[in-house]
Amino acid sequence: MSDMPTVVLRTPTDDDADLFFTIAADLETWEERSPSAPAPLTRPTYEARRARAAESDSAEDSVTFVVEFDGRAVGTASLFEFDPLARHAEAGISLTPDARGRGIGTAAITQLVEFAFVRRNLRRIHLQAIASNTGAIRAYEKAGFVLEGRQREHAWVRGHYEDIVRMGILRSEHHSPT
Image 1 (cartoon, helix red, strand yellow):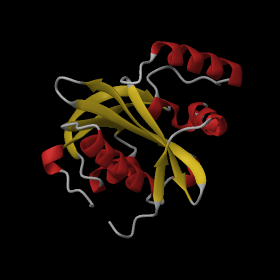
Image 2 (tube, rainbow, N blue to C red):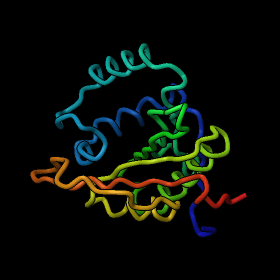
Image 3 (cartoon, rainbow, N blue to C red):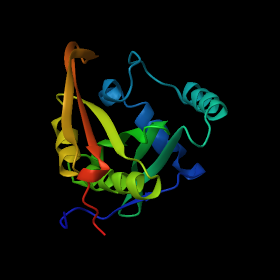
Image 4 (cartoon, rainbow, N blue to C red):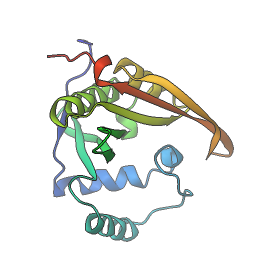
């Protein structure tokens, strides 16, 4: 994986508000990120949602990083729905359109997996993707995720039903780059 681009996962700052809104409002990838029906998202509605979410979240509910490439914020990588007893969490990544298909997602998800296993002491990480999102599935496979199952015609995406692919990685399967 030495040919992967150099990506930094960093703490979000107030300067990242535009990035978060751009990703949240992207109608092209809406169904891949959200189970809610697609609709134009205004900045005030988005800000109100974030404020409500911040009030209800505790530090243990999720971990979100900004994905930075060439000194520019290009996406987010998160761990959420932690299960402290079984030691697992779900992973998610969202990139701006210009950052897709360049290996940035693979590098980011690889670093997120490393953080989850080494720093958060997780035993398992899982995720889901729309079956037609072959770029994301390929990135997850390169990071060590394996297919665990498929929910047939589970999501309504851009005018038709699509399968959801479920993938996971166990700490025992992970090969640390260090």
